[in-house]
Structures are given as C-alpha cells and as structure tokens.
Amino acid sequence: MDNIAIQVTNVEKVYKLYDKPSDRIKEALGLGRGKHHTEHHALKGVDLTIRQGECVGIIGTNGSGKSTILKIITGVLNPTRGDVTVNGRISALLELGAGFNMEYNGIENIYLNGTMIGFSEKEIDEKMDAILEFADIGEYVYQPVKTYSSGMFVRLAFAVAINIEPEILIVDEALSVGDVFFQAKCYHKFEEFKEMGKTILFVSHDLSSISKYCDRVVLLNQGTKLGEGKPKEMIDIYKQVLVGQYAAPESENARLLDDEELRRAAAGGSTADGAKRMKSTGTADHVHAGGGTAENPELLEYGSKKAVIEEYYITDDKDVRTSAILKGNTFTIHMKVKMMEDIHAPIFAFTIKNVRGTEITGTNTMFEKAFLEPVCAGEKCEVAFTQKMNLQGGDYLLSLGVTGYENDDFTVYHRLYDVLNLTVISDKDTVGFYDMDSIVEVCKVD
Picture 1 (tube, rainbow, N blue to C red):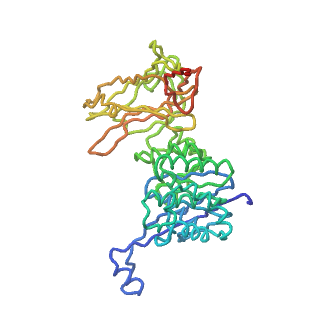
Picture 2 (tube, rainbow, N blue to C red):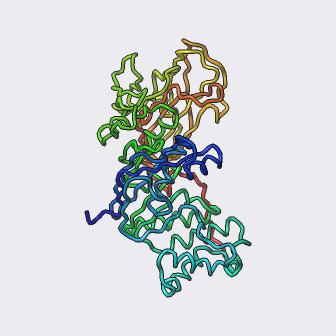
Picture 3 (cartoon, one colour):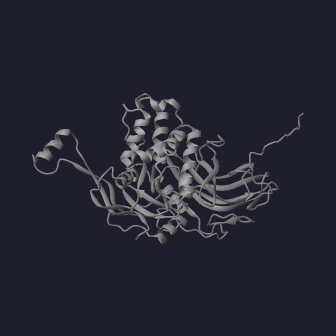
C-alpha cells in the first residue's frame, strides 16, 4: 500500500549468550561438539504496520522487546529473521547523542549528525538557528562536547534530532530529558509534529502520554506481540501484565489475539486470566452501586480474590447516592470489602481517569496513612474517601482496588477498572484538569 510508512513482517531477534569468552572462541573455530551458547529470543515473529500520519505507541514491561524493535526499524540492529520496510526519512530519539564525537564541539557535532542523517551542509546551515535556539546552551556550543554537563548534552542531542524535520519520528523514552522547562519544550515540539501529520512511533512507560498522543497502541510482552488496539484497551491489559494477572500464550505457536478478543479482555472478557465480564444485577452476589450511580455494565475485574469489593457507590455533600457532583462541593467514594483470607495490611485505593484513559488523580490508604492494620478472614471493611471536587466539568471514570504486599511482593486482591461514571457539573471551567480554586484580588492603583 502506498500509505504505509513502516512495515515489519515476522521479525525475530535472537541473541547468542555465552557463559565465558572462551566458549565464543570454541564455537567460532568449530572446536568441541554441540553448541556452546544459549539463545535469548528478544523478538518472536513480530508484525507491525504503521501508516503515514499515524501516531503509534508501543508499551510493555522491561525486556519485552520495545527498544529492540525500534533499533531494528532504524537500522541500528539487523533482525535474525524477517523483513522491515521504511518509506520516509527517519529521525530517531533512541540513545540521545549516540552519534556524537566527544572531542568535537557542539557546532561540529550538529554538522556530523546532520550529514549522517543525509542532509547537505547547506540544509544544515538553514536549520542551525532553530537547533541552537531549541538547545539553548549559549556559548557552550563552541566548547568540546566532553566538557558538557549531562543536561547540556541531552539538550543539544534532542535539539538536533527534533529539528531535522523528518517524515518519520521515532521516540524511545526521550521526552523526559532535561529540566521541567525543557521537557515542556520537548512535548510542545512533539505536539507540533503530530499536528503536521508526521508519522510517529512512540515508546514510553508514561501511560498518560501514550493515552494522550497515540491513535493506536501495540502491546509487547517477552518478545511477543500480544495485540494492538485503542490506547485505553491496551493500557488496561498492560496493567494486568504488570501484576501477573494476564494469561500469556501457552506456546510460541499460539495465535495472537485479534481486535475483538482484545476488546473483550479490556472489558473483562475471559481472555485475561482472573478477569470476567460482570453484569450489574444489584444482588448480593455481585458488586453493585445502587441508587443514582451510573455503573459500567461490562467492567474489567481481576485479582486473586483474597479480598473482594462487594459494594461501591458515590455520595454527594448531602449523603445522597449519585454519579453527578457539583464542582466545588464535597463528595465521598465508598466501598465495602470482604476479606476471604487473613490479610496482613490491605491497601484500599481509587483512581479517577478521563474518558481517554488518562489517570487524573487518585490515592490509597497507604499514601494517606489511614489504615495499616491486619484483617482476618470473614471480616468486612467499609472504606470512605471524602474530598472536595476540583476537577473541571465533564465525564470521568472511577476505578477501585484492594492490594497489598506479601513477602515484599505487590499483590492485587481485587481490582475494578472504570467501574463507575462520575459527572462533574460546573459553571466555571478553568485551564487543565482541575481548578486551583484561586482567590483573586484586583486593585486599581494610581
């Protein structure tokens, strides 16, 4: 297809691991019988199609193959098997400054990097002012790079990569470099690229950025592509992977999940281990809200069930159950939890997300130092979080959870994602996610 920017077909990357250097020499010379190495499969038959103008995110735990596939796409690594086709000029923010010569000064390194990417000296001259303005390191640009602080180094490296004006931008955890002001510049430039319709491939552990910027998200785990879909769906499944609540394919030959299966998993389908689709029946056998609270009929539920959230709801400042809260008023999030086994110190939590899946705020009893006690099997806890509503007007999603630590291992007992809709009613919306509730004074002076 003419509109494909990146095509990755059945790509595998296998590394040979040797116990000691002599084993590598023996195998190279054909000495001894058999293999002297073990194989590590960093990527296992990954397919990926990115169309021109798309912003695609890749998420996964450490060691899932995210950086490996980016290096293969950019030509830093060669695949063991498979094919990669790239249509367009790439600028990659992988290991910032990897192509810099430490003995050269900043200006010389700008020309060096620009030439490596394929620009002529005249084209680099035209971009020089923009690069220097973005880096903002002053007269240090005329000093050898080896004398730079780490902050100055990454600022210059990022400025070179981002101002090359590529057709395809590849970013690997590089938007969080430098101080907070430089990070703001980086994100602003990233947004400019997206508005210009550039093709962007984005790897990050910052799930809020993935949710905000990406049109589609690919989920990798242990070198295998679990699937791809809308950011919110993939992020919900990724969170199950993080806490060991996701059922991995039983064999390397197991087929990948298709879009419908991923949607079911994100909504609580049987594809995910420990997750089930729940209907709000209002009976004692199911978690329920009751009253005027707007429930999600197909919420995502998982956990070991050593503790179970039996009931949950929201009340306003008049103690009325509701899903609509007036901005500026106090409201309370309630949940009733039954302990199915003895738990040393359960942690009760809530999170509020916007409709795109970005986590806006939340807290738990450990953060608040509100409850750090053992609870016996059969006992119940009624939990109430009371706070002032300062979020801007709009619709939000509430998630609840009971977790804890067992032998220093984080454990999810019961987690309910997007369980309730929360509507904030407001006659004054300010900038951003929440209102600073400022007290303003203006005085005329002579």
